[in-house]
Image 1: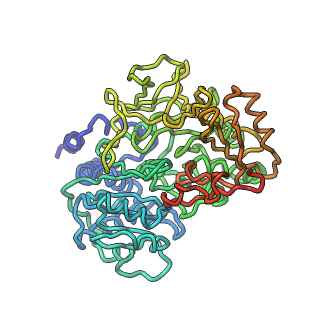
Image 2: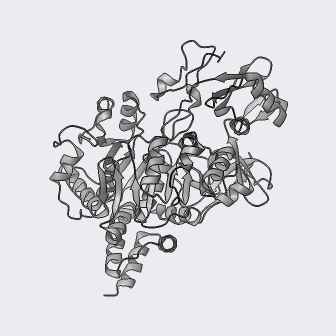
Image 3: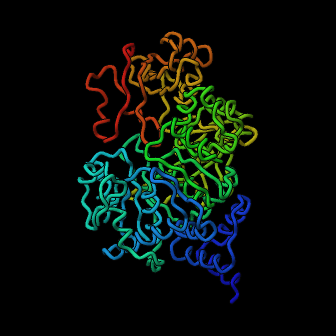
Length: 568
């Protein structure tokens, strides 16, 4: 048998031979242990049958079968076990009538059950919908109905929320504290055959949900055949290595956590997860597991640093080479402070659910140009366009458009992002410096016109966020009879710091134009955030409305914004 010729033919039939070859080269650079030719051939057959998600597990199981793939609160789970258990889950669901491209909803925190469901979905050819753990019952019901979910896998803690959703194919409990029964994930796995599932009629399609910070979350499906480019571009900038340990402190149902965990597992890394990550757990896990990499979001990174230099400095973190951050904006101040304390190990990915990633900033980028989100990685291009679709000169602000093979296919409910000449809008405004590094100035629809002047909140937020008395800040525009809009700042004070409204206004006045000074500053205990760490500005408290945020009740998200006694 001409194994190499057959492998090349399978890669070509999978549709993206060049991308797959480039990804393999990046994997080789990451130190992946290449398997014998006959096992590589089996992996390529899995690629054709199950798509890249199923093939990634197949390859890792062949190369690192006895190595722990996951460590959660139940302990370690090897790659061979993960492969067999996801086989059993897929076969059990098929025995209950589940067919290719049926909707499989997953409402779970970070633990083995979430990943078993995702890999089983690949082997079923399911349309796998990853659901937000902050959903209320009505919102879950709406999304499951819109996305035509046949079967729902959920953690026991979400049982009451899950009751609102109607499913024809049943509901199954993932993480639970009671006994195993037929309608638990463990029960399904025990009932299913561990043999390789038959090739599904269609390949898996994963549907991610947008963050919903400005409204109802939208479904964003992705053609996973095109996603073979994802690992290559990611690894060209973020130097994950094979067969090491990665601590995941970001929700895996979100695009950033899913991307990073999938690549980590594909490289044969041990992924350390927990259902409720805290700064304390993260620091303990990094030390105990001698972690090579941390995947996280800016808010958790900020809270990790709040543990203090003495506490962090007392830990053995010598193995830590990479802190990969995304999910929301990483401020220049936070990036610099982290690198000053832990070394030049911070990598910042900028992108969106719709476009995947756009740019990645390396430590060298952020040292040279604090605040940058870096340059495009392999397989990606960016352009800044004006309102007429013309490219703006370097240094000038324009709308950010991204070109790659990884764009989503349009929202499941209809509509899409704006596309110009094959490039998709991120919805942000930015500028590029002389060295080709991108800076995000703010959201396209977030600009505040105050007294005829244009203000992007991000600039003021970054400045105030660097004040020693401020931990977190959010800027919004509110109606004003005189100026049209005025700036209102919401501020969370740093622990032990006493700072007042006048001091912060003076600080802005000394560093920015006068029209960028907030007209009012409201101090709150904490920001309302979604699970990915993004501030949900519509849920910030309105001091003129005693009933609080009107839109928060509609969203089903949990608001944590609480005014302090000196807010008014």
